Length: 391
Image (cartoon, rainbow, N blue to C red; front, top):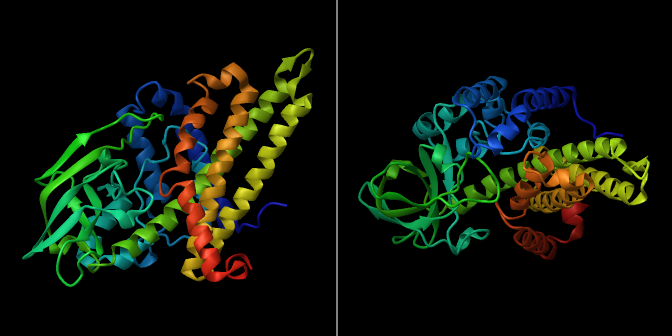
C-alpha cells in the first residue's frame, strides 16, 4: 500500500514529476558535457516554468503571497525533482517560512519576496574551514560600529554564490552585551571588502558553484541584521531542518529513478542466454534497494508530517536528522548497486547512474555530515528517551 497522500499532494506530485521528466531530464547530458551550463534560453525557461508552478514560494506564508504548502507536500515535490541529475532542479531560490518569521517588513520586501518571483537570488555563507557541520565553531566576527556592523572572516562552500546577489551570512558578535552570540546578516555580494578567493572544482558538474569568500572590514547596515543578536543559531536550525528534510526527499527520488532504470535494463540485458533479472544476485540488489527506498520514504514523509502536526520542534529536528541520515546513505547504496547492474554502461558520464554516483555522495556531507546527524540523534535519545522520539 502506498503512503496515504491527499488528492492535493498527488496533484503536486504529478506536476513536479511532469516538470522534471519533460523539462529537466532531457537536458542532463547537455549540462554534464558543458560544465553544468545550459543554453541561456533553456535555463530561463526552466526558471520561468518553475516560478509559474509555484516552486519558489511553496513554503512561504499565504499572507505574503506564498502558497503555504505543508512540509509533506513540499517533500513530495522535491522527491520528484530529485530524479534529475546535475542540480537542474535548482532553477529557483526558495522563500522559506523562517525568513518571514525572522525578518521585518522592509527586509521581507527587499530580500525575501523577490526570491518568490525570481528577481533576486540568495546564497548561504555559513561554513568555514574549521566550522562546517558544527556552526557553533564559527570564527567570522561582526563588530557593532554605530549604525553598521564590521564583518571579518572567511566562508567556504558558499553554494550558488555565482548566481546570487546577496549572502545570508552568519557571524559571531564580537563585543557588547551579546558578545560571542551569533547573528545572521544580509550582505550584498558586491559589497566593498568581499572577495572571492577560490572557486574549486568538485566531483559533480553543477552550474551552481561553491566558492570561498574573504570578508575584510565589510560594513553592513544594522538594518540588514536578521532578527536580534544571538538569534543566528535558532534561524540556522530552522534552515537546517528544511534543507535536511528536502535532501532526504531528493535522495528518495534519485533512488526511485535508479531502481526503475536498473530494473528495466536487467529484464532486457541478456547474458548466457537469459535476462540478468533472472539471476538471484541481481534480484537481491534490486530487492534490497526497493526495501530501503520504502523505509527512507516512510521516514521522510513522517518527519514532514510530524512538523505539519505541530510536534515538539526538538523532536522534529531529530526526525529530520534521521531522515537525512538514512535517505542519503540509502541512495548511495542504491546507486552503487545500479552502477554494478549497468556494468560499463553505468560508468559512462552520459549515463544517469554515473552522474548520480558522483552527485549523491555529497548528500552525506553537506547540511551536516552523517556523523553529525548521528550525534544529534544520540543526544536527543539521551535527553528525551526513545518513547519521546519515536513513540
